Image 1 (cartoon, rainbow, N blue to C red):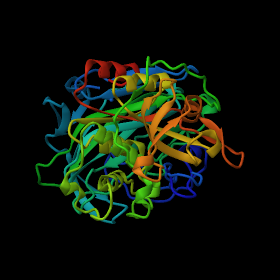
Image 2: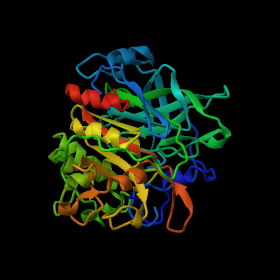
Image 3: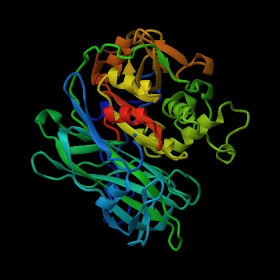
Length: 478
């Protein structure tokens, strides 16, 4: 969950944020940088997906009629359909794009280290995607391999329903490594055109009540490497979720759909046992709900960090892989581990893993995934009185949904638990459904604040069973 005193990102969407300076890449791919940072949205308490090569896009309708659409590019034909400048499509077992011949070099001053360095670069731009329902929000997620000495920049540009266009917005600068030869992975603040803004990882229409929406979009990838080397990032998947999120305090109740209880054998990790460890990464374990949840599902799929990956962790600490996950998802601008796409990108650093950020429409969608053996990570906020058995309230928290009881209640691995043994919880279906899917709620002071509207992370391997492919396709991920 988020740090003490922090404000959830969705609550900040309506706030006026002052602009300040920050460094940016000096290239046509550069974007404006610099503004006050929305605080991390993943800490407890104080107020605060398809087979490689398959077509990759669909939509999900909620019971309230809202449509969320995820579309991805991941197959060889997808990469060939984009505009490649200095990159080539690799048609291997896992199709992706790599640098073939750099367009030139650019200087980048890392705002978090002060280091200025030259980088060779090449770009890939997606075809224009027309949203089936114009959106108030969009979130881009990606899967890439970025060896030391490489990194990628991910951008989004769109057209509004009034015919005007957005600028190229930077949705992330990503490197899995944070060593001396790499940049510090970061979101970029201060991006706005007076119609829309980017808040950490989310594109948002500034005034949804005006009726303005995002009608179309493109994604641009800029691959960087140290000059004079043959290094290259490899991008396997990039996609965006667009949604028109309604204002609602209550969501329609769903009926349990699984024929019997189903619980997946997902490892259990507590974020709380890491409290005080590595405070440079979002004040330590108290705020590590997102990476802790990510690590649970990564290990469910049989992947783990190597001994080399964990060598930096104090050997006296239990579950060092959770510390590693926190470091590997930390956003140096956001100053937190709860950047949604950064968590999905981290999951995809493991062998043949994929990660997507999307929105689901109901617990029926979640049941389809669980029925196929696919756990999910959900984002929610609630008062202590709104979720029986949790024992706390939060303005932003991530949990892992691992199953359903015979009565349709939720079985969750809740990282905000005092020990690994205490992580498994059963929560009431109706309570859970509402705190996860609503977009408006009242905080402890009676103030109207935002909810996440069904945001979730989906992690899954490149090779899937037919049932798993069908379950993902049913929620719009191919």
